[in-house]
Amino acid sequence: MANIELRLYQYFITLCDEHNFARAAERLAITPPTLTHQIQKLEKELDVRLLSRKTKKKVQLTEAGVRFLESARDVLHRADEAELTARKAARGEVGRIEIGYLLAAAYSGMLQKLIGGFQKTYPGIDITLRQISTVSLISAILSNELDAGVARMPTQYPPGLSGFPVYRSPVVLALPSNSPLARTRGPIDPRTLKDETFVSTSVGFDLAFRQHVAAIAALGEFEPKISKRAGDLTTVLTYVSSGYGIAAISGELVKCQMPNVTFKEIASSTAFEVVYAFMHRTNETAPASKALIEAVRAYTLKDVDTKRDG
Image (tube, rainbow, N blue to C red):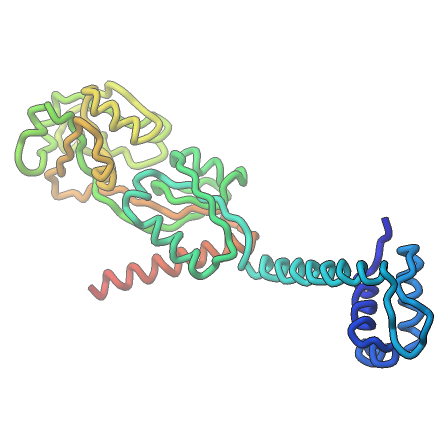
């Protein structure tokens, strides 16, 4: 296969457009002899005659030249598109980003606002969403399986990972609907929970994040009894629905409408809340991901200012 320089395509196309060596050479800012030599070089590399030599007054194409002209225009067009795409990618205007998220983040509507606003500004960036647990999300970002994510903010970020808060949600109690506590009115006093059995997240999850069950038990002055543990809050709610116990979860999951689950507020002067953070690699270099980080940061600051003004 001939390794033809792009400039030879351009020389040939210009010559065909002008139908004259002198005018084409002037447009290309080269001399007519140089243009003649370059066209001959192109024919030699192709091992095909492109021009008819019957007349010197006007350029005439052979049948092969006519076909090659169509392909040459397509080659230059694709080369221009490739160059434009590369420049857009370098500016972070095109690319692909994979984002992990917790179910609660989607139910809050916050994730959709972040992604929707970014897509309007950067329509050339393809975003793929993946529902994932917080611990797995952190691991996936650090191993480059994900580019960023929205999940519960850890008590401490591991090396290589950074993040900032984007949303706060109150912690509520999830109870089996047939339990006596579910039928009471008003917020639940933590002291009334000392005889209850709890469903909680996995030990690793609890160690990395705020231990809400332990905090509630401390207020109620009792040692919590854990019947089941799960790696995600959807499974926690499923256990609650099945009657295994009660759970402390993010208020956004009230929208799950899990069967046989009733949600109650916690009566306490202490604010129980889940803090969600946008997480990303500390030294991110990909232009598209850097654009996303800046867009989310700007949105978060704007949202804070709006609430402050309100």
